[in-house]
Image (tube, rainbow over all chains, first blue to last red):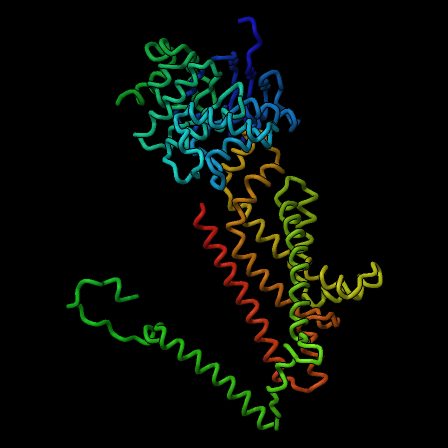
Length: 247
Length: 279
């Protein structure tokens, strides 16, 4: 690899009142790479990706996103956030706005693009997530799977360079998981840089370039999926995979 | 209501009539209210008769509307009511501004801002409204040159601003953390998040208590009559000093306040219903 990684994480640590949530995390992500992070709950997966757009502040180490080092400067942080889309477990759509308004508010208010252009863009991405007909509804009128697809489209409307997914299917009813994963697989096909925290191992096998296994705030193993699923090096990782692949 | 819970079985024996259930029934409670009101009126009447009070209700309507050579003219009670509503509206607007500013300061990360807001709240909340009014008028007047009206508006605005700020704070806190995170993650500033995401959602929670506060504002605006600002209560006092009809006029003034505040409550509960259907 010659180009500079789009995300550089060096010796990252995070302390929350007396508890070490992240310990010495080192990870480089290159543009166009798809990383899937898995691990038991409480292992720091969510904390790690929330550090990348600074919803959490790291307490030690260095984090450079798209050439900007994340520190105290709020202007830099906002610049980074515009380039880093985030999809939450609980969708977090804006309930007082229609679907279309949810998608246009970022581009219009933050990116300052014209309203008509923002709407055209919003309709394009609604098409991409297969719900163009829901544009004028309110989030509460949609199913969970549809809401999560709107949330993905909302992030895409900012035309970010990186997309973070924080357990995007964990709050969904089983029959809606696939409609969301399908959209994510299609997105991976477009060359988007993606970091996904998930337990959906079928999805991971299909799209991941590298698997990251975390436990107790540390990265235990990083491997390509074929190695990761067939011959994990660490004992802890094997035990975890046995547990979730059993069924 | 109690019967509705067991609709099908007619075989079920009738429930015993307890004292509690008798008082809970609508007929009984309306009757009780009627008796209480009748008692109050009777006491007032007999008391007034005993002291030889001369009722002159026929003289009251002219203070609402009277006929002159030129046509009709609004009476003192109506112009006074208008002045009360205007005063309350201006002061309420000020209270909203003060309240929002104080609430945002308290929720900010600024240590000094938080402290200033806390001190302001504690001072205002723990001081009687009447004393606050005297401070604004007798101290603020000479120093800053406030006239009666300015002192009244400022006093009412600041006093209710403290209460309104707590309403704003509760409303803002009722919007979940996820909304903040979603707003941040698309690159919004704190100000943009408040304006486009958080405040529009918290209005739904704030509307009912804000109505209550508007009603309180109209009621406490009566206090400015002590520094002779022209409004409904002052108008009532002036009429009484001319005519000595204190019973009729105070009853009338009380009724006017009651009608206005009830109308406001009904109007806002309608507004709320319409708002609730949308989302």
